[in-house]
Length: 197
Image 1 (tube, rainbow, N blue to C red):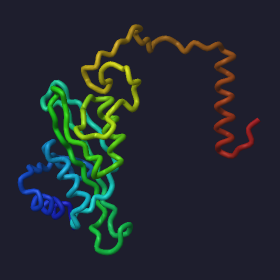
Image 2: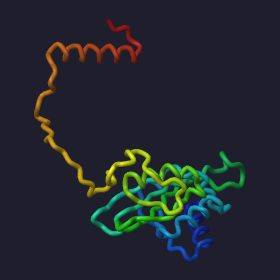
Image 3: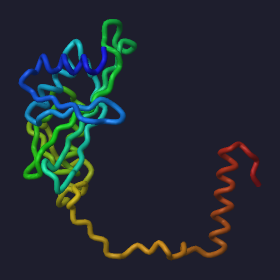
Image 4: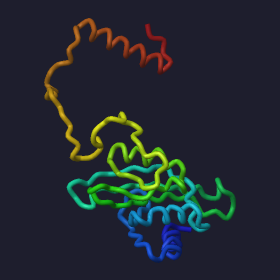
C-alpha cells in the first residue's frame, strides 16, 4: 500500500478535515488544521489501513514574521509486516504539519493517543511557547521554571555583551600547543590500535 492509498483512506474516514499534501524531499508530508490533529493522530494509529504505531518525533519551527507563525511538526512511523505480522501495511514514514498563529499559540495535545508526545510537547512549549490544550503536565522541561520567554523563537532577545573576534589567535603557550598536539597523536594512535610512544 503506497502513501497515496493511505492518504485516501485518511480522507475517507475524516471527510470534513482539509488534508493538504505539502512538498517534501525526504518523505511524504501533509498539513492539517490544528483543531483536527487529535482526530488525525487517532486515525493514523488505529485505522487498519494506516497503522502508524510510532510517534518518532514532535518539534516546531518558527517562521516569524510570517503568519501563521509556527509549524508544529510530527513524524509518524508505520513499522510494517516484519514488525507487526502479516496483513500489516508496509513500513512508511509520514510528516504531519500543523500551522498555528503567533498570538497565544495553542493546539490540542495528542498525549492520550501517543503517550510519548508528553515530553515532546513540553519541549515545544518550553522553547517555542506553543501550549497544548489537555496536556497532563505542561511545564518547562529544559529551561528553569523561572526562565522568561521562549529561546527558540526567532524574536527572542538574545544579548551578546562581547563581540566575537575570530581573528584573534588561540591563547595558549608554545609548550601547551605542543602538548595538545602530542596528546591528540596519542589518542588517535590508541583508537587506531597503533603503539604510540
